[in-house]
Length: 108
Image 1 (cartoon, one colour):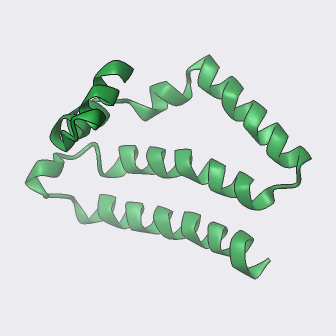
Image 2 (tube, one colour):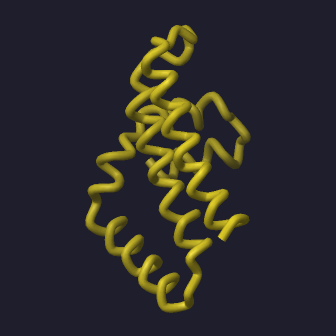
């Protein structure tokens, strides 16, 4: 999978990249023990170095990926027919994640 993704990126074939990433299950990827171990190590390093801003940003990326997969990616995106409930859940979740990032980066 990774070799296909890198070859599509080198060829700048974004339709192929979209197809590869569309077939990727983020929840399965986040349950991979290697991914969990790497994320834990990065989080520990960021806590030790007192990088709260970087830690919040680092944890926001998988949160956005899971939010996207649970709401938008489940629907047929090519048809652009999303239910209002799923779209509102996505927008609300995005606003919460963005508000936490804004608080840690600018307010605090």
